[in-house]
Amino acid sequence: MSIRPLPRPGRPATVTALAAVLAAAALTGASPAATAASGSRTGAGTAAAYAPSCSGSPIGFATVDALGRNGTTGGAGGPVVTVTTAAALKDYAGRPGPYVILVSGRIQFSGMITVIADKSVLGVGSTAEITGGGLQLGSTTRPGNNVIIRNIRFTGASDDSISVTNKAHHVWIDHNDLSGGYDGLIDIKRESDYVTVSWNHLHHHSKAMLLGHSDNYTADIGKLRVTYDHNFFDGTDQRHPRVRFAEPVHVLNNYYRGNALYGVASTENAGVLVEGNYFENVAHPIYVGYDKSGPGRVVERNNRYVGSGTPQTAGTVVEPRTYYPYTVDDPATVPATVPAGAGVGRIDC
Image (cartoon, rainbow, N blue to C red; front, side, top):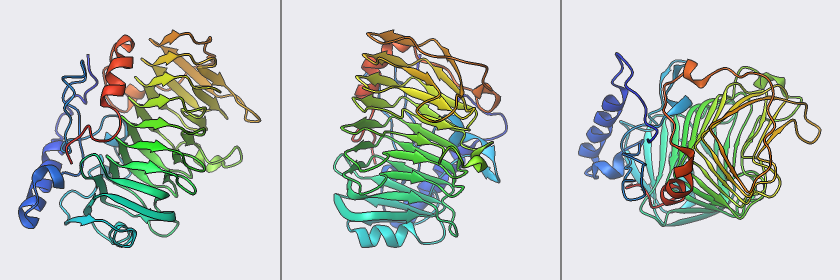
């Protein structure tokens, strides 16, 4: 059974968003596939059935109506532009209003480019790459709310590859390939909220995904609600994710393979549900507390542990179903479906 968003009475948001995208396509002469600002998968039961596109919507926390937003639509309805240089990417990512930004080819820069509200940053085909630098969603003066990043290869970042920060909310990070950066591959912190991280391939790196700025940054309490859905943690060492303060965090149907230090760590009273995942050759699949951080809470259910250690659990966690409906893939299928579907070139942008 594949994970799909269930119908939400009274809210045809996907249809509305797609109609806006098609209108943008008509105005620009671009194809609907190229202009679509969000995406979904159409069946993940087998590799052959996996055929997602750039139209649709995520599942999980990015779909939740909150903080004045009806889910996450990115740049839907805005102009569609193609960028091939760092200067053009920085320009359009920092402009007010919605934009669908198509990244074509390899773009190299150092540091971080700030992406502000109502943007879709979509890689074209299977060769879109950002190397040497990363994308930061939001600054202290320009929020990074309602942003979508999909189908891009991130390599060799001088800091984070993707940083969701400064109260950014409603973010979807999907179908990217991330490796070889200096710090985190996908870090979410500083009161950010309502984020879905799905179908990404992470490899050749140590610190994969941090959730929560530091043990002392208590402003994150009551924020940082994130769904981690069908990601492939392929030999990365740690932080899949490492969580502080957040609740609930939903770690759903991910594939962990050969992670040297640990899989998931819940610290500083965070509440994490680890559900339907497959851990292969992971000595410490789940930690309660880590390093100098105090213990969090973890509920684990319906996971597979193959050649792996015993997970730690503690306490209770708010159910993600409080916020959104979902179904769970049989974890036994995860080692086939996740590598077949995760990463770039699996969606039609």
